[in-house]
Length: 331
Image (cartoon, rainbow, N blue to C red; front, side):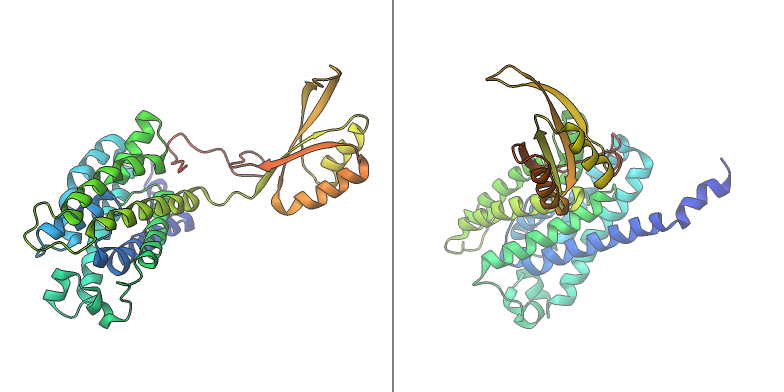
């Protein structure tokens, strides 16, 4: 392998875009925690959810610092299981996120006391205090976390923590990524319920109704997992069409091949009532093509039987490329 073969990928647009996306994802995630999650003791699972729990027990230590404490052992495990190239991205993203969280937190709070208390009334001068709108804080934080994690994972890295656990579950237990995150986060939310909700291990008084924060935590986990799935896999707008026509197969074939410039598949079938042999057409089109296809089929055969349904993922020529075996499937 020549030096050019090693260095050339580093100067490609794709390489730079990948790292910029990871940086943006880490920044978005850190900001989501600082502004919408940490101040309200919402525990959205993961290493940083566990760090929020630990911060309640030891307020003098920042949430991001606890993130480092949890991440290091899991990073070592990721290096062992996923190799050097994956580990390099994981190390950068996992070390960058808690550092950004600490920096943003220090800049956002006016004093050390406010930072230790994570007082939302002093966050950015109280301009985004959502103490009376916890649902809005939960939604905003969840979306930012989902977008941030999704950007990082889509570029074959991880922010560390339970992301690594979820990837291990996907690789060895064939549990999809977002489901793995959900399982791992359940343990963290339970610890949040015990420490923040019921005050186990805390010397200070428990805020009335603190246990309800765990309900917001569950909402946060669900919303962020859905956003992660959407960011990783993208929104699928393809439609799957099944067509049964008695005497117009050739006209439908010309419609698909010549007008739509697509291909389709004949599926051998038979009518349940008559037992007559039929050929059902299996066709995938984009969402914007559905209405015009429906109208053209009606023009060709008003008696045609047609079913239109969503195609969650479509791979192959004209659609997405087939995924590699190590690519992350979010949902």
